[in-house]
Length: 478
Image (spheres, rainbow, N blue to C red):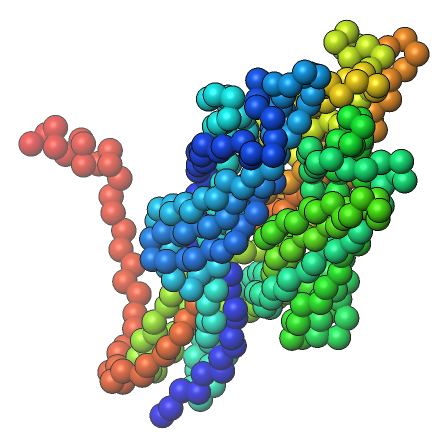
């Protein structure tokens, strides 16, 4: 007698683990000869660029740089505000338990803090602290038995599961290229500060392809040749396609963006423009919902069946929820008064998150760094304030067993100095909550027929015992 097993293949994206770490990147730089000596630093900012990620057994190596701009008070007759641009290259090897070569690692690397310290008039030290959040996944094709044929009296114990099966992972490079036009009266002396952000992220599914769309938001602060500080913003649409076999509208697409390289270069004075080129790595992970009827146990009264069972871990209930938290504040900052606000660096961060009745309750703070000064004088000041926030996001189906990974994106910002010298603050924070549950499945992968068992006469033996009181009374008489 032979057993015919009907099998099904499931591609699982198993979470191996998460590693949260910090890295300190520090380097000394010499002020270029064409720039004046430095007295004091005013503001330092940077953008993280990731060149390469190498996954090895038990560790991961990350190569990249921080593209940093340092604004400083110059040691010259006018005490002007000048700037210097530099790259802090880094190569970090991070230990990661259970990580194996060939696994997928998703990373979220951001600047926690960056500062510049003056060593002498021609030399500075730039020190940055990076927050590194790594998640490792193992992609595995798994075969399991869904039906058994060839045995008439077999009895099966089945159980239904709904899981998120991995459909595919793809990546592409998308370039944001544009020439940003400035005012005709402006001639650029130097770039002082650059901010890069990616907003309005969208995905659309076409035939065997995922369309990736977003806006690369650029803010540039520059010094003109007549010593005026100016700012210019630009929005560069970016788009790309990622091949994904059998993808459809019912699938879940999880898209990750990483900036790989930045080039900001003023064109000739006659063109009154700045050339911008940004290279982005985009990775798309696609899941499909699968309803599975999995055999948990089997038995035959006439045949000895032996089977091998395996425990696997996978994901279920995966969902990506987006919602916008509007922050509206009025702040009086005496230092700013009626001065011009050139730029505001915004850094939101979550202090705590709790799940209450299909809602995620977030508590956090927004750090605002105002760069301001008199409009007619090339001098700036910096003021930092903190705004607390609490936000409830509706998340149907979420529970305390859910794993939640939340990112905050800034989709709108506006700062207006009112006639009473208060600042009208408008910020839209988009919360992107990626939730799922860990699911453990027992799957049968192999069945063998052993020697036939001998026919046995089965019976039930029924017997009665006397009450406990009877035994107690008789033990006392003895």
